[in-house]
Length: 376
Image (tube, rainbow, N blue to C red; front, side):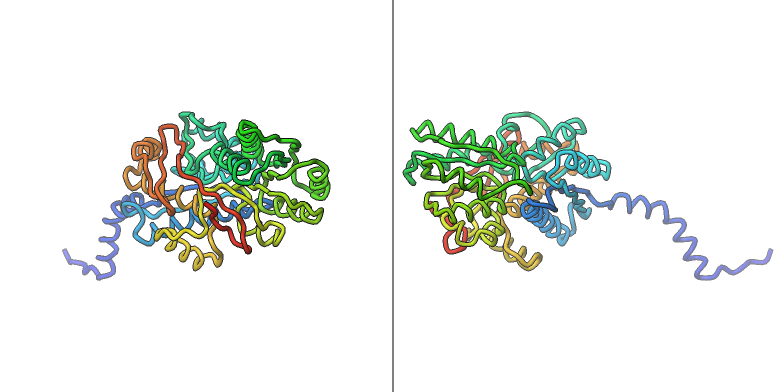
């Protein structure tokens, strides 16, 4: 029988064909680990959501630059909840359908409260950078957060308002678009402030929109004997209310909340927001080495300075990434995080308890010369 010569390219084809199943298996093993991020990326409160997405993205990119986790690249899939409960639930459905092992989000308490029944039903871990509602405290579920509750924020501010600022009568405005956070914040502040002997002499919930008159809100406060004003809403609306208060020659103390503490507050509020008070777990002027490196990387990547949303989202992503490096099985993520307990944040360590709640120190800040400045 005559031997038919086999050409070199035919040999290569045979070798390639014989290796194809192993190659496919190798590709499967190297499939990316998928993480979800969901927050308000458009609309009135998009400053917080965008900052959160950027912080989470930076954490993922840093890990990928080092080869990923156990040789697997991390893929961050983002969704916009539009600060709408129905959209928030659908966004999480889409992320779960896409095969994410966990979700970073939501950025506001109301959206987290809306989405959590689905999260618990599907048993997919959600780690929130900025959800602080007391309604989720002390519950064994599939929700973890990297910030403490708004009760600690409100009590910190109430004590400062009464003792350091000498306020006895306060008027309050809170935004019902994020009721899960603002209503609890107001009630906790009121309880603590009145315990010291102060009084809330006026309070009003509102929903920002085209029919809302900031001038009317300010006028209602001015018509009372309030020595100070508590405002619980996002950056843009806080800025607008402060402008109207100052136009009406209100010279009293204005107390704000963590939700408003983004660069948009200063850019929209200008001189009207000078002197506002905050209780935060974030210090814009921190000199912690990890934070300074992050800040430099963030500015290089996004062209702006990070705020509390981006820092907490970075921390949230790092909690998940660290847990995945210990055990990449999604079913074990919650137990892995709780077992570890203590995590290194950009501005110091924080502890996550067995219910997924975080305990960390708060800092008092104000706006001075157009900058967020620590005052304690």
